[in-house]
Image (cartoon, each protein chain N blue to C red):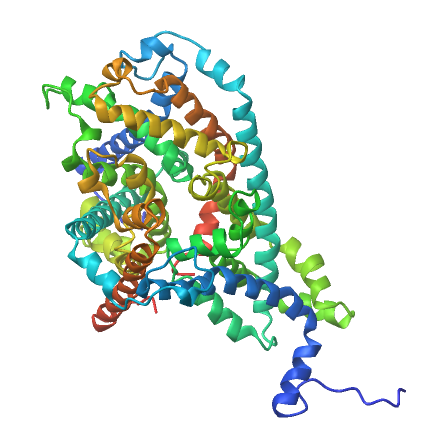
Amino acid sequence: MSQMVQAKPGKRGGIGGFFSKLWSQKQLMLMSVPIAIYVFVFNYAPMWGWITAFMKYNPKNKNLFDNPWVGWDNFKWLFNRQEWLGVLRNTLAMSLINLVFGTLSAILLAVLLNEVITKAFKRTVQTVTYLPHFLSLVIVVSMAQNIFASDGAVNQLLMRLHIIKEPVFWLGEGKYFWWLVGAINVWKEVGWNSIIYISTMTSIDPSLYEAASIDGAGRFQKIMHVTLPGIKSTFVVLLIMNIGHLLEAGFEIQYLMGQNLVIDWSQTIDVFVMKYGISKMQYSVGVAAGMFKSVVSILLLFLANFIAKKLDEDTLI
Amino acid sequence: MTDTNLTYKKPRRRQDIAFPIVNAILLILLMFVTLYPVLNTVAISFNDGTDALRGGIGLWPRVWSFKSYESLLSDPATYQAAWISVSRTVITTILNLILTSMLAFTLSRKEYVLRHFLTTMMVLTMYVNAGLIPNYLLISKTLNLSKTYWVYIIPTMFSCFNMIVLRTYISGLPEALVESARIDGAGDFRIFWQIIFPLCKPVLATVALFVAVGSWNQWFDTHLYNAGKPYLHTLQYLLKMKLATTQASANAAKSTADAMTSTTQMTPITIRCAITVVSAVPILIVYPFLQRYFVTGMVLGSVKG
């Protein structure tokens, strides 16, 4: 029996006990601390860059604090720009269109799929509709350019159905842009978005349906009174999350498809940041715009969560 | 006593027959709309370039031609881009799986002193994002990763969201496994590597799928950091460059036919479609086999989870 007294981790009190416990868990530490440092570097450290929104940042300056302090000037410049107001409008418009159509289409698809009895057919539809989610937006935009071209499938179909007389220049007229983005997003994500609703629907108590049957409810009424209420909490939570992302209308589609003809409609906050911050190298302005977006997004998230709490619904936080 | 049928039998109504039919029709229509752009692009890619400019190709090529693919596959830039795309996807995925599950394991250990601190740290990152410019400055100026291959790997080596999904899963594994291994004298790392990691296969498959797809589809980091280095371009970026030239000519003309006569250089639409197909093919092929993984994964990591 060893004469040495083993230091028992945690048996010594206070800070000494903490460190000895830490030491006894050194393997866990080695497995986690380096990753924590990584996360700090890539997720937290850049926040330090927000300070440049209050300066006139010149990358040539070695020392961060060599840059002149300008206070709120960058923000004032931003909000006085006509372009910026247009950017906000575009971002919100596209977000709302995506939110409304995306949610409605996902729920509709989930309802339809939920009513399918043949498992093979259901699985086939799901396999097909989940596919576009995995394609990159570059690929999707490329396909969209084929479909919405003047001689593309959409125009051909509409002409054949006598809805329009001549091809519409979908890709080149600004007023269509928001709806194009909405259509592309729905096409790409409706299958994926429906997954969460479908899985919620499968957990609805079957006896509710039976009770509805006995009360004489038809298919449609069952959907209205059993299925839809059953997904209400999922719907609310997702809605909160989406409201928190209202300013994140997207970047890739708008950047890839938004060219000079439609720029007034296509520029979102992220595209604006890219254009000014990176292409034009006005870093301070870019950071200011991005910071505005991040801060407002967090506020929106808390606001939506708060409203949901007040309405006594399931909340995110 | 004869059998009495105790189940409630609804009278067959017209809507009970009409509804499934309408439902099926709608869903088939949806499948068609989903697949049409893909098939249309494939058809154009197999069409002769000059003929394609006339427009109006549907689901099948009008004038068969393999020229676009020939020109694509004889260009070394294509193979270089394919190599970059494949290698970055594989490396990123493997690193992600190891690092994410490793941290998830440590955070699932209830006795770990840093557990709460690190978990909060990870969760918070999902709510705040520094923004494009600060990240750009970090990666290109501070870390000097610009114009290198590693800018594809290092910033995307780890994902907090996936880590949380894995942590939930690992927490659900029987504690007895870990305890008996401890009694046998195994250290934490051995427990993770030899016991927990192999047990996470279902979730790891899902995480691998998401990371791989995300990595394969990336083009923006190439655009930001490596645009000036052709040998570091990815397949998606190759396609993106073709999109840009098509856009430029769309500015000047209303149809692709007009654009041909304009002075701007335009990539034949068939080449663009061929690259689209080549970029999408790996996903299209692998996808049907992996379908079951992402549905379970999606539900596991879902809001309700």
